[in-house]
Image (cartoon, rainbow over all chains, first blue to last red):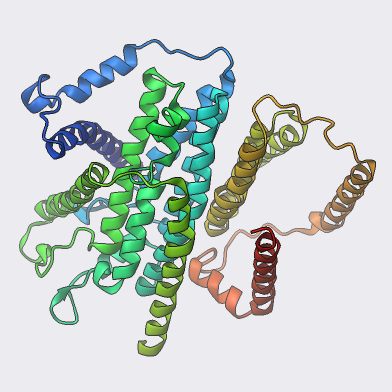
Length: 345
Length: 165
């Protein structure tokens, strides 16, 4: 029985991530249109909502073109290596509290492991191999440059990202993402919600900036900067191989947003209101899931908002921001947090 | 016979042979990635998920990415790397170091038939708390020596790079 529940959870959260990644492709285009005072895709279905389906059909039926000089195995392997980490990273992040069906308590999380946090870090670091292999396999100057930029960027921003997360671990005292979510109930200092963002404001800022860089989003989309290197690592890709790259990116965004909500924005907890007090077991489970999802949506929309508002950095600016600003700031944050904990606990 | 062990052991060794014998540099790095991954899988099998995660995060996620970065910076696809090392002194040194490693392995394998297969693990085995406890109590000296060593390497790296800035 347990493994049936586990499979249902895996299938559910997988489909859910894919669904919202699909909707994100539509929201991105509508959002950009809104910001640039255009209409955006509005023909397929109501508000153009069927546009992602049309895009999907297009990607599936397109010719699978491969340049003659590309290295066949690496070229095919690239998108797969990119998609696997993207699709497996969500496994340890909760998507709600718990739901009781027929007297059986089901945690809304695929795997509740005590090192969940480190798992996300490790899987996140593997995403770059897909980009590198794709770029190298295409055997094309622009693609290789894109892959090269991607590795440099990932090395640079993994450090402040990890240090910001480490400071959060200091605060919560655990690597267990579910435990971290459970600790964020009640109030902090008597009037603020007991959320991570109020204890780690600087850490949250560093995390967000580094998350944009990790996800290769504007203003950090140097690996695919179309005004400089055509389309970077996916210049030679078309059809569903390109689709995997684009899709994997949106799934990554969902995972990063969920991680951010779990660590800094109280996961499924509402401020000042304890939902479990007045809701039944089933409705509480659903409510916690919806609250969590709404918070994730806020962050997903902010990704779109930033993308169409901020211009791309120059390459040396990206490196300077990473090494000379974010890393010292993250170390400072770590020091302050450690001092504070040492003096108060 | 432990099938799980054998699957990943064979994959690991095969990937290792691929790493040192293939001519193109980036597939070699991917071979090394496979070695790290199969090692991580073996650590999970030994009830040490934390070590497995460190293996992936540090070796595959940080060190190998640096290697890949250098490969992409200096080489091009389809560049034959075989026989590039012309210096016979380096070749002899590589052979000797490899031999030394094999000797270490042989010494390490000495007590292998006396290994006990422990059925019951101590409470909290592989837990991050226990891990940290060991690192900061029993093995504090080793930990500090390693961090001082890394700091020295860091300062040395900055010193060497700074001269040319």
